[in-house]
Length: 418
Image 1 (tube, rainbow, N blue to C red):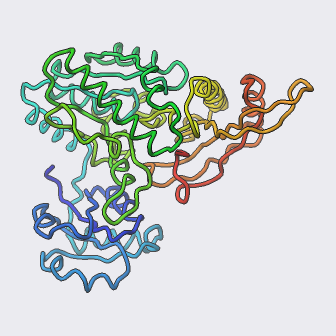
Image 2: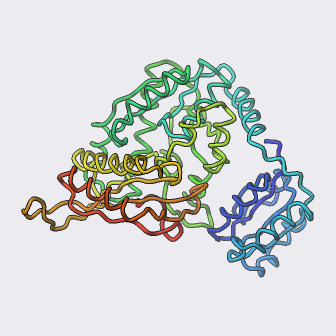
Image 3: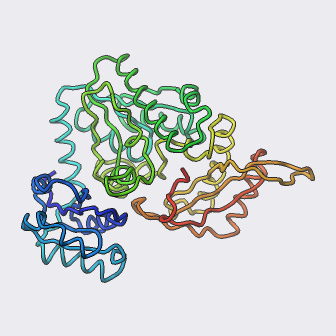
């Protein structure tokens, strides 16, 4: 990219992502790097300013960075969300660094399409298409760059929401002129995941199986040179840096195996936050219905069933989740709430149905407001709507006898439970 850039040096403070996000809101491209990144690497990026995230005392440790000769600012974590903190960032960017604010999504899309075209040339490309916002924007962008040299692979791993596999296939074939191959691999994935309860292990297994399926498909369709993935910036940040703890491994980041049968993995969206991906989608001409589709994790329901995965548990969750989403839409809240879904907690408790004792599952409901998935506030759904949702799930999903509502924001919680 050819944009002005501000570097944020990570001294182990989680809020560096929030600072990057606020800077980008001001149309300035910001990138987070580890504090031990070689000075020559930082210089090569030609930054117009450098921000040190942490206590003011760290400035004394940064003599080499000072020598780069660009304006520097030390930001403490607890300034970040205040009005004075916002003014401090604004003044630093536009008064001290004299930036123009040239981070524009149309320019990004044009530059990335040109870059993909140059990188791929006449090569053949596979794209991991889940039907979600990230992978769809990724696929359309690559298709605009190389046309029919792109083949999209939709892996139905049996971890999708109710009827979603069929919907994804219909949307891709009707709305976009893209080569699409659907792989039905439910039994394969559930077999690999049998007996696995640790969420990090689940994510890594799902990530590796995705890659293996693509490798096998590549051999069937002939020579394929590149794999395209819809990885976005929060995926990378949450998967950990040298100075920040791993929050969770994303299946397309921490879950990648060490050896793959492609020349290169192309990740056109890896520098973008979620709302920026949506903006790029709009620029590319993707419909509002698709661009504003509710986020869905790459591992799917695999991280929304707590504990071991079985087809029975997945089917229970699918039904409960469908009712939740249907009622949210029925009450006109689908455009107001950023993300909402059900979780099969794995907890069972005593209840009563039809005057008989039951020992059923507990479903947790999660609904949040967010812009970029880096922070989120739990949604205050009216009690009468929650009551309707709870009554329907307990009545219509016979294996469930208790509903709870998650009232935790991010942080301290993450959006997904696993």
